[in-house]
Each structure stands twice: as structure tokens, then as C-alpha cells.
Length: 294
Image (tube, rainbow, N blue to C red; front, side, top):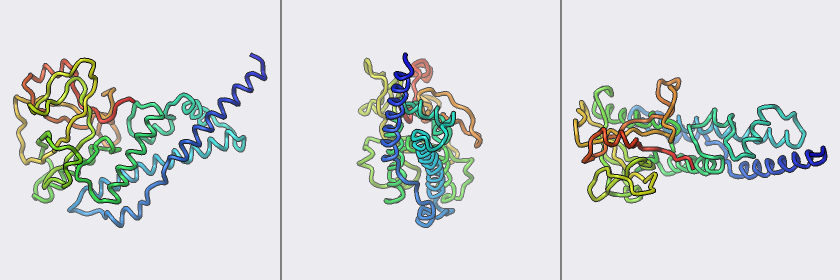
């Protein structure tokens, strides 16, 4: 390849990357106004969900700031206004290959999605948080939209513990799969929370029978109905008739321990009614997943 052809090729790549950057910059929203959120949802002993929302806003703001800053820096580097650092070069390569840049991943939640799908997912997550800020605590929570779903589940238990004047350590979750869709459930339950947005891998939910059943041919994933997480004091888990189904954030199922001592991927296990043994579904690798890889 001649030097001219090489230069032309590099210029073409730079032009494509610049176009991608412009497209993303146009879509990325401004950070949330944290002061406004704190005024509307002050940290209250009686409502742990306010604390959960504020923590989510802080995490999303950090991510949005990194995305915005790095895109601005990359535009300057592509125009020759600043030096193209090795970090920016890696970022440009990632964008060109429809991959999420490492510097964004470092501030983001676990995800296996390519960049285009990741951006759609990010905007949906921001919309979920914005809806909460604008319209109040949701009747049904999109669990896949949380940066840190474990804190949300702990907050749910905390609300119940404080209202019932019980120690949080004595409370566990009961699980009820709802017949109503997330749109039909317009009120928060008296206790606990409704969650949706999960996908079943390795099995499907039989709504008529109200239990887990075998997947249909060529059906890799199916949407799980709304689950009601019901706090129960001194709860004893059932010994049979349920599959203890783990919830993971991504399909890899592997994770590391974060600084809080929680797994970066595993969320919680829910008990789903079944006519089969626990072993049967373990062999099938059945799990609930927050986000798929496309």
C-alpha cells in the first residue's frame, strides 16, 4: 500500500469516527441536576427509595460526565487541536469497531452489548431514572435499569423493617409471579416492590399453570412476568416445589466482588414454582438475566 493510500485510509477512518462521535454527542443527555433531586427526594428515614434514587443519579452522572468529556477530547484530537493520547486512540478504535470504550466501561455497569445497543440501553436507563424523578416512585421498577440493584432490594427490606420496627437481618423476601403486566399495575404494593425487565434463560414461565416449564424449540430467552418481592419476617424458605433461580446482570454470569462486598454480576435468587426438582433446572442452567448481549 502506498503512503498516499495509507493516509487516505486513515483520513477515512477518522471521518467515520468523527461521525460516530457526533451521533453519540447529539444523543447523550445532560447530567441530572443533583441539587434538584435532593430537594424533591430528601434523604428520609421513612423512605429508603429516596436514598436509592440519589445514589443512582450520582452513578449515572459520573458515567455521563466521562462520556461527554472523552467525546469532546476525541473531537479535538481528531481535528489536531490536542495530541492524540494512547487512551484516545484506543477509544477511537473501540468506536470504529462498535465496541464500548474501556474508559466508559470503567464507570459503567456490567454489559455485553455492542456500542450501538449499549447506547440505546443507556438512554432507556436514563429515561427510567428521569421518569422516577419527574413522576415519583414507580409502581413497578425496571430492575435492569439500576446501576446497583442490590441497594434497591436492600432499600425495599429497609422500608419494611423501619415501618414494622424489626431488624433488617430478620427479614427475607417471598416471591409472587404476577398475572398482571407492568402497565396494568399502577399502584405500588402495600409492602415490598414489583420488578420487571428480566429474561429467563433455559426455561420459560407458563402463565396458565403458574410455574416454570421447558423452553420451546429455538427459544433462547423469554420475558419473565412481573415479580412481587414481598418482605416476610423470620421467613423459612420452602423445601420443595420451587426452583431457587439466580438473577444475573449479564449472560456471562461471572463477576467479581465490588468494594461494597457485593458481586458485580449476581443480584439475588428468587424462588419460582415448579413441578420439577431443583437439580433438573440446575442441569438446564436456568437463570434470570437483567440484560441480554444484543
